[in-house]
Image 1 (cartoon, rainbow over the protein chains, first blue to last red):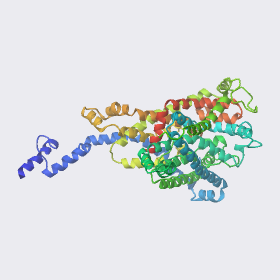
Image 2 (cartoon, rainbow over the protein chains, first blue to last red):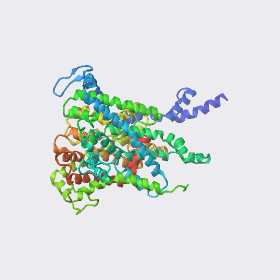
Image 3 (cartoon, each protein chain N blue to C red):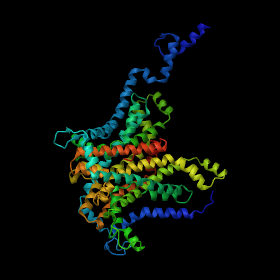
Image 4 (cartoon, one colour):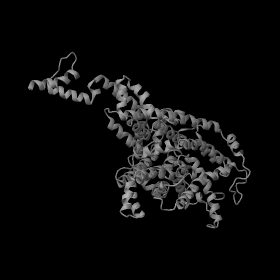
Length: 341
Length: 270
């Protein structure tokens, strides 16, 4: 019996691991070898696996290089630069936290830009709520819903510079459509200079931003809606749940990841919408629409204060991380990890 | 479940669509009408429509040059994106030493918006000697993480048995990629082409920073420059807007499905 067992075990050894019919090692070892050989064949034939590893790494290397060069390295460089006094053609001097000290204690523009950025982040939920309503509507079983979806989504892929010019035109004091309508309906006595007034400039920019992002939010929420299993609603209907109840107890909780995803992407998109602000108001009037990104640009490229701009960038980046992290925690961990461009 | 009336839904959606479309219409109207822009009340329908403003744009700025620059940069970005992302996506479907590290790196790179890197990015591009060149304009956008994951998902969906069969038939790794994987990843390619084109076509901040001469400027920069030395109140500005918007609008309407698919797959599965 013992002999039979042995023979039984030798067979895979003959087939798998030997050349010329000479078995290597004891039976158990042969078993082990043939098992691993079946699982990870490439490793078993050493040369081929090295070649494959080289192939794979050479496949991933170009992308990796781009991201190291334009994401990781800049991040590190920003941090380094923020502790230095440096401008082109001058040697860098380590100055510790001086840049940060100036930013936090002597720079009112920074605080204004930070506050405006926070206001823009805070305005993201408005767009998301409108989009939620629209997504529920275009999810209904009605004729022509694809056309509605297209029309609402149309503004998202457009060039933001053009969108900014369109909205400048809409908000114009003398000839803007919004002022025409407001005057026609006798809502206002004299035209509102939207983009030139301290009170209206930021809300106007935010409105244009929501207009552009609305379709995107709607599509994300719609995808979330379509992923909710229909039998949940049937079961709830059989149990006698009212429509409002079904919405509050089924739709909203299951949409939570989509909504937080919208918030994270929308937040990232809005606070980085340099082109919209730059073209619509250029941060003005005064500093009423200055956001951190436009401030960084101005510091770096019109005042050539790269070191200080780097310090503002570090704070900006930490702010984004903190908001994303919070949203991620609130959503249960599914959102985040994605941005547009 | 046809119990509730449909017309309120239609009404609400019509109102929403109206708000979304009116700005387009207003700009289009302004760009073709020959009337005095300050006339009050304004006409809803353009009186005496004519293409004069479009001709104005052609002569006022080097439109052809801007257009060419935009096309060159977008083409470079699209080609590089498809090639690099497909390669990276393919390698992420394989097991190799250091894969987890690479995945972590990609996911953390997603959290770094380009706007938070502009100053070092400018300095790096300067060190590479690529400021004010086509390659310098396109290089930072050569690879996109979302699209790498779109490719990975698409390659993961190729049945294992098909690849094994090809391997038994003696196809090399390269031929497997070219003859089997790529044809099956057509959807991912289309998605990537559209996303990369739109991102690169619309990009404003990076060209603003990295170009110096007018000859290297792209359309968004041309548009912003046009705004800065013309009054808001000339129809030519709006004619320019329409000319710039038309290509991406057309592409979007033609390939809407792929575009939306790319966004949602990048957003929900990524």
